[in-house]
Length: 232
Ligand SMILES: O=C1O[C@H](COP(=O)(O)O)[C@@H](O)[C@H](O)[C@H]1O
Picture 1 (cartoon, rainbow, N blue to C red):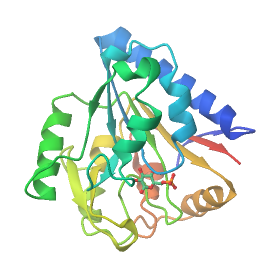
Picture 2 (cartoon, helix red, strand yellow; picture 1 turned 120 degrees about the vertical axis):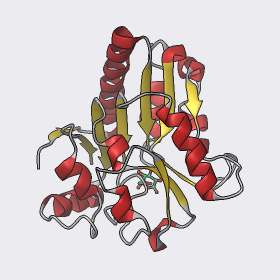
Picture 3 (tube, rainbow, N blue to C red; picture 1 turned 90 degrees about the horizontal axis):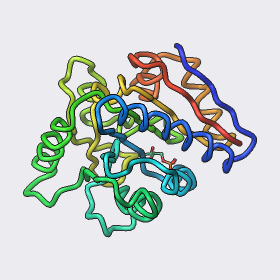
Picture 4 (spheres, protein in one colour; picture 1 turned 120 degrees about the horizontal axis):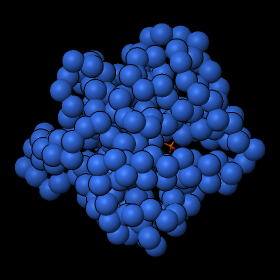
C-alpha cells in the first residue's frame, strides 16, 4: 500500500495545511482548464477545515463543489452532509462556488442517484480534489461494511456514478460516489483526527479484507496515491 502521511501537531494546523494543499490543487486545475472540481466528505471531522478553506483566495466562481456521499435526507435535515457544507464552507469567498448536491427530491433514491450521476458526469473526470473521511468501522464515503451494494461500489470496472447504499451502520439510506469515480482524483486525501481514528487506520493498513474495512480499497487500490492528513 502506498500513501503519503502528513501528521500535524494540532487540528487547527491540519486544517490550515490541508486547506493550503487544496487551494494548490484548485489553482492548478483552473490554470490548466479554466475550472476545478472538488468532492468533500460530511461527518463531524471536516468542519474546521471547511472554515479555513472558505476564506482562502481562490477563483471560487470557477469551482464546483460536491459531496463524496450524502444521507438521503433533505438539505435542511440536521444529518444532511449538504447542510454541513452550506454552514461551514459555502460562505465568505467560497460562497461564489457552484454546488452539486447529491440529494434530489425524486420518486425514489435510485432516481435521485441517477440525477446526481448525470450531473456529476457532465463535470468531466477525474475530480481535481477528493477529500475523504473515515468512520471508526473503517467506512469511507458511504462504503460501509455490510453495505447492500458494497461489492459493486468498490468495483473499479463500474462506470463512474452516484449509487445507493444501505447498511446497518449507516442510519439512513445513502447516496455515494463509486470508488471508480474517486480513486483517480488528481489530489486524493484522507482526513482523520484523533487517536481512535489513527488506530483504525493502523488496523486498515495491517490487513487486506475490504469487506471488513472498505477504506482498504482507497489505501490499496487507488490510482492516485492517497495523502493522509492526521492530527491528534
Ligand atoms: O457517515 C459519514 O461518516 C464519515 C466519517 O465521519 P466523521 O463524523 O467520523 O468525521 C464521513 O467521511 C462521511 O462523509 C459521512 O457521510
